[in-house]
Length: 524
Image 1 (cartoon, helix red, strand yellow):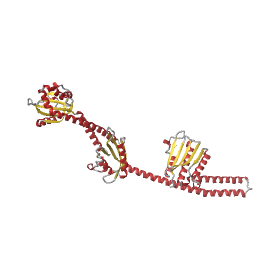
Image 2 (image 1 turned 60 degrees about the vertical axis):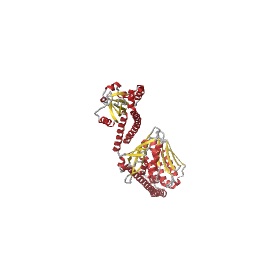
Image 3 (image 1 turned 120 degrees about the horizontal axis):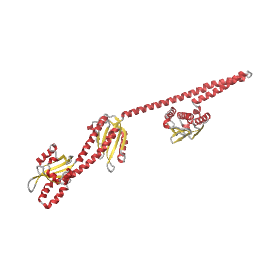
Image 4 (image 1 turned 30 degrees about the vertical axis):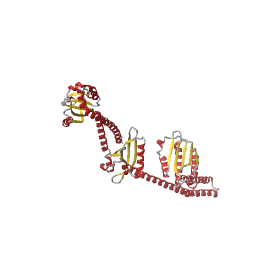
């Protein structure tokens, strides 16, 4: 969520700006209080300064130590006295101030300044924020306080003016304004429901996305963190609350959660909620900002896909069961019908050999060949029937069938194949036995075709509530990230899934391969 990342950066910057702005405000308030106190005594102090030479140094020190630029002037604006702070602020010397016109630093056409002059003329005092011009032409913002007083000795009007540089504060305010505007525009531009939680005061602000997603009017929005939990689905409420509570109490900065949130029509929308937390200098959580994205469509699609996958798994399971039943039926028919017919042929040929011992050599050879062919036919029929469905699996169980398969494989391909089992398969369902047997067959075929192995180890054992069948070879091995998506591996995986199991394949080039089928030990 690029929008959220940008918003997060803007929000953190805005928080820093606000903190600095608050510090400036506090400093400014202290300065203003000091200047107000100074204003009350400025007239008397300055006039006494001229009248009483004995106190001149004391009053001069007060003026010079003023935190703001202090001016004492005639009603026409002619400067009589300034302090060093005024000289430092504007870049003029005291003598230059006494000789210059106030228009050098004030824009007399500025409505704000005109208003201040009118207010002072009417009430005798004024204050406000204006821009002034320094000697180098630079414009700065100042807070100005000015009042008129009477010279106690000459009874002439005098004006006292104090200016405090607030340029930095104004810059901070402008930056804060821009940041706030950016935040508002971001909430308008995104379809996410952006929220901003003041943890200290427990106030929750919602962006316009809240109305777009959930239908609530912004004026009716929930503005309290605890009350907002009422709209979270009851089943999701505790994990969401616990997750946020853990974040606040810990040191992490980010949180992500998915849950259901009630809309204005009573329906629930699935949302993904991502948030960052802002902490003070002591690490205490003071603010949390996040965005809720409506993922209802995605969740519905995921549920639909999950349902389709379940249906496909059930179909695959059904087809495998049907195939096994068909193979079982064909094996029985081949063994019973074709096997009996082949046996009859063999018996008839043997009978002819016994009853016709005096036939010529050519006929004897034909009868001998027919007898041999009948024997081969019987052997072939038995092999086909066994390949279709080993009768041993139904009659003696999985362990004996796997051991017999290993012996047959070793005899046929000349590769040592050792079987070992520490598990009694008597309680294992027939479907599980069948699928494990077929997985072993497929694994052995893969070893024969691809591994160039000299030794294979097939093992059956139980672990906790599971049964594990592993087939390990010492062959070539392969990169599992490249070759586990073949039809053979997919078929074995589907067989495992059909009995609620999992298939794990571990291999390393040059170090052999292990195929492990893990299924639950339950009887059902």
